[in-house]
Length: 268
Image (cartoon, rainbow, N blue to C red; front, side):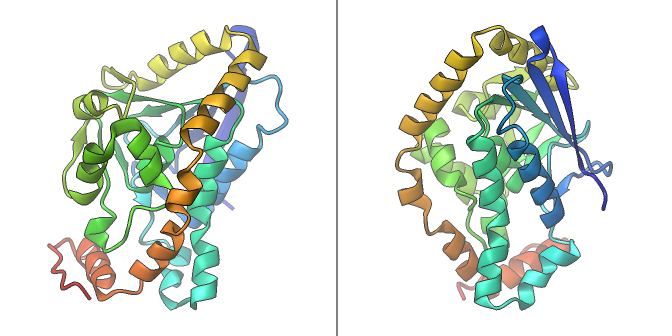
């Protein structure tokens, strides 16, 4: 089994910063089912860690993540799964984002290159996002005949409001530049290219210098208030995703993506 995720602890003031690095070494950093499991396990590994106050999540030098890996063999096996098996397999994504959102530690994402689809879903589950000036985000799910799931829509709504969330999700082919992401409230800081990690670590040091228990309790309170209705609002998005995956438009969207051509949707 290849390790896509590494964890380094004991950094920064009093050793209270940890860095989780997701890097498949291919410049793309797609989220295969195995990568989803490893990133979920990484988040859960901090559950009983009282020594770490802040976790910085970073990708590779060229990309944060290209989103779900449509070419991965396990991922493609979804096409032949029965509905029960498909629903169970689709829980990998929301399980990942929930694990990162529910961490007691403050989480900061350092984004270089591109952050696409599931990469955006993971990024908006974090507390803060720092993005390089030449990086971009994109949410291509609708162009693939799917819905934006993993409970991402409520999180994006909290950050950007309804109009910008619709713009980001529905206009699937539009790139969101770092400047736009900052203006919309999707990221909190924009840095020079190649400097997002350094800026994220500087922010982490400021957080780590604060009283750990007070920081953790404050994060918990803000999250509970902000996300109180999220489960109600998005409890069906997994089933919507499963339903959308059975449509002809989804098959056409994936085929067009893999064939590097424009899709032709017919609402079927």
